[in-house]
Length: 325
Ligand SMILES: Cc1cc2nc3c(=O)[nH]c(=O)nc-3n(C[C@H](O)[C@H](O)[C@H](O)COP(=O)(O)O)c2cc1C
Image (tube, rainbow, N blue to C red; front, top):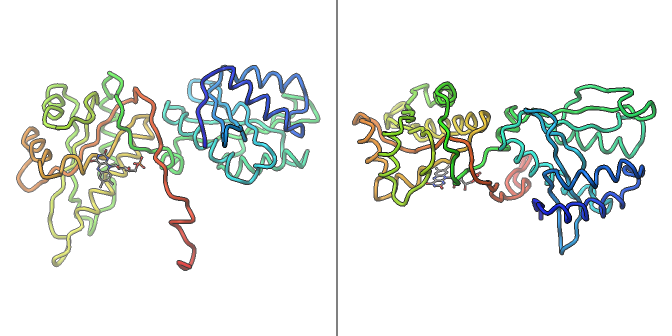
């Protein structure tokens, strides 16, 4: 289980336990002690089973837009078990949620020591890209490879999008950002290009208050903006309609744009389209024409609370290659 550790003493205890068990990578006492000391003040994740730490990972900020994977270690008997990847995923989600654009990591360049070659392979498998080799940052025998990962590329944005249902920071969302989010929505594909999805962006505090008052039980009470998604239930051809697919594609595009711009949101459809038809009340407040239906609202804002990625089934349970067997 991956845990975010906050107690500085616990952090140092875990980092000491793990790093001292990995002399192949952390033999030099001075640098090992530097990592252990530093870890007390860095965001810190540990993989813990039956009260025993199997590995840990720390981030540290190196610039306004960049976090560095400052140090990580996984016990050798736990290598190739997915622990390093899970630790990294938790750290990547955290950095993305805080709006960072990049994660960098430094290691000894490929081809110098077999143990560090495995480290290079691990970082590459996570999606890191080569940025630069600094031949004498450390010393001649240890050329420093810097890897970098963009948290804003499509794959990472998809990976770091999660439904957020917490409170929002009291801060308006710039109109330019709301326009980009709405543009992402209308850029989505639509069946027969019928473009059945339209959008009302709500950032006027008076209108927002009216919408929030119509949502019972309340959700997104503190959101500084909302995207209201409208669908026209028209036929694409013969008796076939694609409006559900159309607005689903538009919503996902907008959720990804929200994530890429450093905001949080949640796809609220079930909540507003149930028997109490909150959607119709929202449509009335916004003066939505008859031929449209309000199908979903997406709050937009910066997260004020922590968020939790939901558990998802294992890849192999849901994805097969070439046949279902
Ligand atoms: C069609 C649809 C309707 C949804 N309606 C709601 C809703 O009314 N309230 C809510 O809290 N989440 C709603 N969600 C969000 C899902 O609960 C969420 O996507 C799911 O739990 C997976 O979590 P994730 O989005 O973090 O991956 C909806 C999602 C979809 C696709």
